[in-house]
Image 1 (cartoon, rainbow, N blue to C red):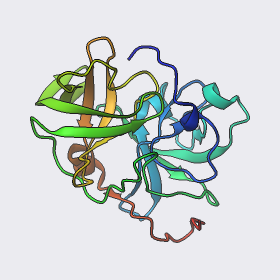
Image 2 (image 1 turned 90 degrees about the vertical axis):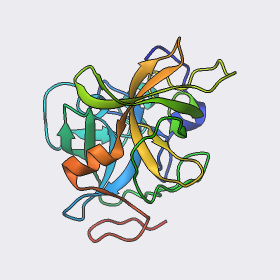
Image 3 (image 1 turned 60 degrees about the vertical axis):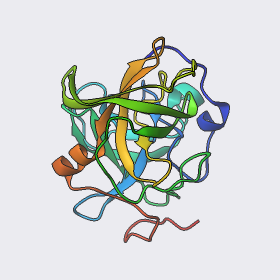
Image 4 (image 1 turned 180 degrees about the vertical axis):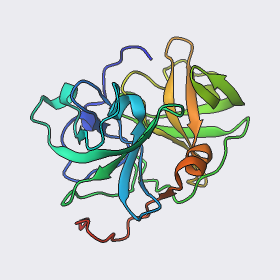
Length: 225
């Protein structure tokens, strides 16, 4: 997506995990998109597959916060790879016992409580490791991009010239700032032209049977704040 200077507040250690902060594995870096609960009741973080498992498939691969690129190899393990989908470039990582989490998104405090499909003309917001909180408009609802069978395309808002996403933002969630509905996961983009590619959360849910985590206690997870 192009090189960017990361937001300092998102690449330093947080005692409470939240969407919008830095995560990664040994040689990758990206954004913690959101927390979800799978069909087995397992609390997981959701991000891009190329962030959590860039090479090969290795269940239980450690996920760290902040990403080692941001904090060095001593960055603590906060989750382990659980499920992934190469075609959708999405992965889930099971939250480690004792890790404290909140569904409130970094900076905005928004909580995603439901999913919906993208619609042309939607003005969506995301919270990412590198460019922070930005907004963009959906210009195409369904389009094959790379190996992703059905992605949606966003562009910067008219009259704006800053980046809407950058390297390190992958995995962030595009959501409706008016309703709090989650719409898509950031896959990648083109910084120079102000364009980003999203993967629909309704498409991800239909493949994986996941729902947003609302912050309630889950058995076998110590989530007290």
